[in-house]
Each structure stands twice: as C-alpha cells, then as structure tokens.
Length: 174
Image 1 (cartoon, rainbow, N blue to C red):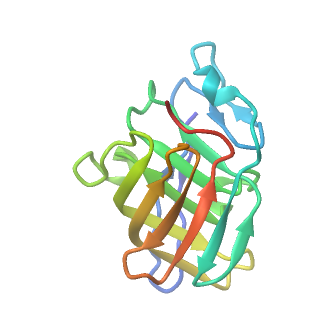
Image 2: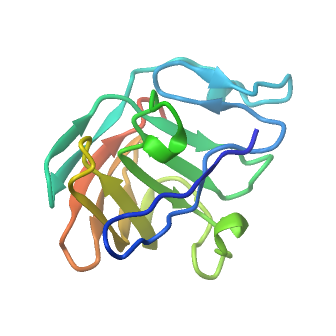
Image 3: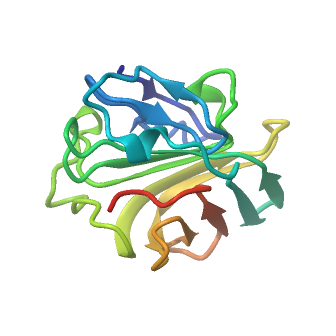
C-alpha cells in the first residue's frame, strides 16, 4: 500500500512528500492499527505497542497522542516514515511528519537523505508541522536524532525556529 502525503505550509507553500507505506508490506501505527498486511510482512511491524506520540515545543506548543512510524526494509530499504498522529483521517491531515532515508517519490536519493539505520543523527531532513487549528505551521530542513531505544528522539530545524520530541510507541527497525 502506498500513501503519498503532499501538504502546503503557510505563504511559502512548501510541499512535503512523505511516503508512509510500501508495496506488499504492512504499515503499523503505534496504536496497534495495521493496514495492508501480507504473510511476508515483518511480525515486528504488526505487534501492537504503546500509542506513542510527539511534542512540539516551538514555534507553537502541541502534544500529539499517537504515532505511525513505518519501516519496511523489504519494500523500501533504508526508508522510514513518521506521522503524528496515527489516527489522522488521512496523511495530509497529520500534525507532524518527516522521513528518514531515500525517498525517490520526493526526489530524494541516498546522497541527499542517507538510509535509515536505527539510532543516530540524521541531518538535512525536511520537517513539517501544522497546529490543530491550522493557524500556525513550520517547515524547514533540520536534524532528527533517533535515540538508542530506536523508538524515541528529537527534531529541530537548522535555524532553531522549531523543535520537539517524538516516541513511536515501539522500536523502529532492528
């Protein structure tokens, strides 16, 4: 199942392309929902876990109470998608989104967005978010740090205008 998110933010109308699914696999949200499961899908991707969520500290404050973090190495090696909340009516209505790893659908290759390998620091990541009422938003290049638990971490734009933290509710990748 392939979902592509395009979202415009503010006057800059920056579009974020975020692939949150893969072909022939399962996407799993931290609230235990699963879509597109196949017999060959990794069981780690189908295990229910905590709801996860995210916190945006600036430029506005928001607490998001669920997460959909997707990693399907057999379908998209080195690619991981992060959407908050998991129960958004559709990917375009997510409050916070970013990807780690190459995403050809967004014009990214391994040189511009190195593959997701678990815990570590990922730079040159497009971060985008919008407040629940749609009145405030941010988008820009930044850094995502995935903690050693491969489940939680932080994000911040390069110019320091936006930051926060996330928890996928379960480890992402092995």
